[in-house]
Image (cartoon, rainbow, N blue to C red; front, side):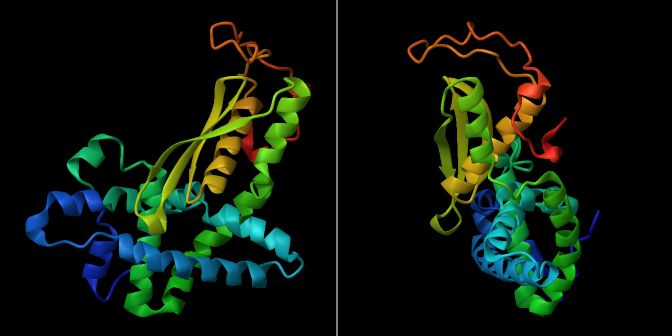
Length: 258
């Protein structure tokens, strides 16, 4: 596990780890939450990731670099990095947010990581952020490339769904939380009325991609129905949970297999 950096001004780190729910429950402390630092850290991280990819992959064209950057900075990826650095254990949450699993929620972890990056930038500058975050990026980019997570999951899912069920996946936004500058969306993808996957992201498009990836992982496990009800049938009991033969699945990211 990678450690959080040491700060010259510890109050910056404390603010970066303070969720809005905690600040709201402790008005007597006049605390500032981490949303402004998150805003700054998002911009700093975007630049560092772009520069990192530009120099590390000189053979990649602009489109491939853009897809790879999107995979690295999506909510789930950043949440995983936050957990790797122990942010999940040090995040300050309000009682209600804590009780509802806020310490494990990807949008909270993603926001806290970006806030820490913003705080470190203010405390020590861009080079300190680069020194801390690039070793994490090196590991994460290898995972993304190995699992082909920079590929278009929505296209893969649609190819499978239309070929094997003759249906098109439907994406539905089920929640949108957070301030306007850092909205976190959650999207579900369903086929024939049955939910196959759910994902979160900083935009509806990113959340849809995450939902499609979750659906592909479910398909890779072969725990999906061989039939779906007619469009007018809302009953889910009519869908037998018989595994699909592995050779009927579309190309799936290797990292999606169980």
